[in-house]
Length: 424
Image (cartoon, rainbow, N blue to C red; front, top):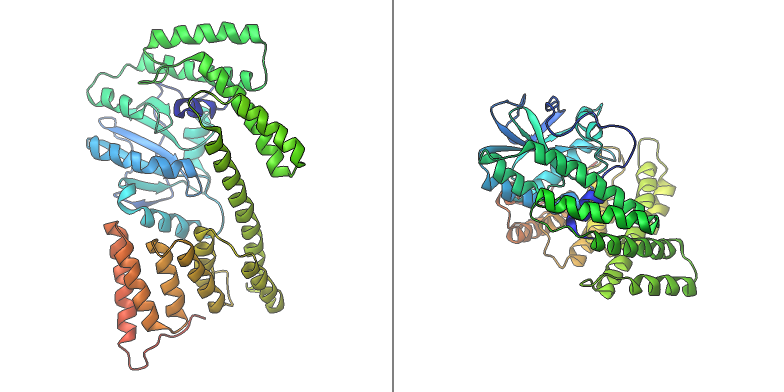
């Protein structure tokens, strides 16, 4: 899907009027903690801000973060704040801190976390009917002047805002038009009345011309949207068949239908491969997460050693190929506070498999393997592996942390025993 269309399609379509819109006073800035950069206690009405909402598990967020950093470097008179929301799983603080540290200079702006009662998500995202993340808000003179996907239209809006040329009235019309596009797309996906769709298409094309682009910098064509909707509908049916394990004849039929309506300029074979790879990875990740959750319970405060051993064997038997999954499991065994019986041998195997799967090129995965070796008392090997982690790291802020860990291992290697005490 085209970036602008994807962003518009993510809008929540409902009958409730948003309580926060373009031109309204910006809600309060109230966060749980600041993870990176100086704290901002309140939004100054004399300054311009970009508040971008994201989460560690959000793949589109990962893609938009470097782009936000580029804009933060470009518009130095604007304060950029990334607000982490909707986090999942145990030890959220450590997870977010680790993510930010790994991103390093690619995430070079202030980072904060939402409150436990989700104040920021409720008063910013939900109040403006934003159905997903990443979502950014541009605030100037205490007012919200733009809302949208950080990859679509934010750069152009910042250019006008910092030059004192931003047109709030036009921004409000564009926001309304984008909701109309989202509704139009949704209706087309449902197979709406052709005559009604044709009428709306004509109105939207006229609106795009009137506004100089419903999305700044992009040409809108309602016919392209209709083609995309038809293709997306076919792909959704095809994807569902793959996920639910329909018979081969049905899958082949749905694949042929999707191929037949592929919009010009898009390669179905490439899309199909990406889809199948994603489904395979998602299934493996889900199975691994479920199994690892059972394992963590079995090695917890009231765990069961026999069950833990059985789950450990099942984890190894999965022969996981995704380095991120292997790394997360290994790191969890080494550091999760809920784990009371640490199987260092399993952590080391998983970490080594992660290194192999990533061809020894990922510094954070090498760092995990080095930690497993160190905690197992193999200090000399830990030192050599940590050296590789440092050498593979290109981000200076992340590298400094890896170097500090290396010094710790080197200091331990200098002891007469030549080994480190094992983790409990």
